[in-house]
Amino acid sequence: MKNFQFYNPTKIIFGKDTVAELATLVPQQARVLILFGGASAEKNGTLAEVRAALGQRSVREFGGIEPNPSYETLMRAVAMAQAEHVDYLLAVGGGSVIDGTKFVAAAAVFDGDAWEIARSGGTKVRKALAFGAVLTLPATGSEMNNGAVVTHKASQDKLAFRSPLLFPQFSVLDPTKTFTLPARQVANGLVDAFVHTTEQYLTYPVQALAQDRFAESLLQTLVEIAPRALAAPDDYATRANLMWTATLALNGLIGAGVPQDWATHMIGHELTALYDIDHARTLAIVLPSLLKVQREQKRAKLLQYGERVWGIRDGSEEERLDAAVDATRAFFERLGVPTRLSAYGLGAQAVEAVLAQLAKHGMTRLGEHGDIDLARSRRILEEAL
Ligand code: NZQ
Ligand code: ZN
Image (cartoon, rainbow, N blue to C red; front, top):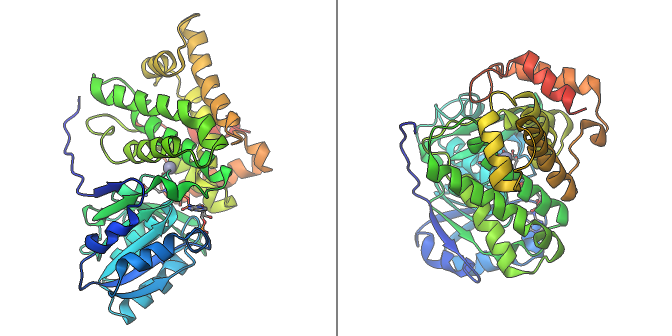
């Protein structure tokens, strides 16, 4: 096992009717800015509950944070936070709203060009406003980590950043708030949580026995609950398991002391920046191909994954490796998430465009061994055509 530090200060309030807890979670004297996305939080009543719980506090609202939150939109929220002397942010929504709120928290008190926050990967963040979250979409883990991804629309840059100052103080996880999710977003959430887990697990063995089995249990849980998560939107038990599993997939726990990959995410971010494909869908395109191309480097873990997650025990080693990759692709397809670029109307031109973006962003040594250079990324993308 590698040396590691593990730190996660985010308090989780989980369960039915927990939005009311905001009454005590948010400081009484806070000047609050509620941030949310499009219409969903208003329509399903979550915002009304939030407003009621905040009671007499000074509250402002900023709506319209879009999926894959843009720098352009978020800077309007920054201007509002500054003009209104806000000192506490409350995100109400999915990963995009929570990520956007992290950016606003840092940008509202940043000296200089706020895009530097993203461009520096977060290393330039020196202070940030305090914030909490009410999660409505289980997927990203943003509710319990210190990372975020924002997009500069004008330049088509989708960049990730993180900072120890950007953990939410708390996150309210009420599974009933996910009942209104469209099937597409549920499928996206299942895929995103699955791939967060594989990014931290499908690398090479370092005898991290508990991390491996934690990761395998998250993967198995996602596979087990997927059909009901899609078929029965108001099945509380299923949604509760989805919500907590997605949080555990990216709150630092399974990634402690193990090598991490993240190449699927980095290549996927470029597909979103260029073609506006949902985050999770980009992962479903890249991961199966990446596993195929990186099969030698990942051989031991891929065999372990095949056996423990998919029950693949028969056949030669080569056959079992193939079967593990095929099972992954078939799982995504069963969820209704296409795994080929062609299914999104993209071809060879897109491969060139993504490679140019990767070069522009210095993404030329990706993966747990840093061996995914542009030539290797090309093979991965061509494999996904
Ligand atoms: O905008 P509204 O109307 O709220 O609709 C949203 C949005 O259209 C809708 N939605 C959310 N909750 C709902 C709901 N609709 C009905 N009922 C509800 N309860 O869902 C749509 C998608 O929302 P979004 O927040 O974009 O989805 P997700 O949570 O998948 O977040 C994706 C973003 O997170 C980033 C991605 O790159 C992407 O920008 N990521 C953040 C990570 C992190 N911070 O650690 C890690 C991830 O790998 C990921 O990169
Ligand atoms: Zn993700």
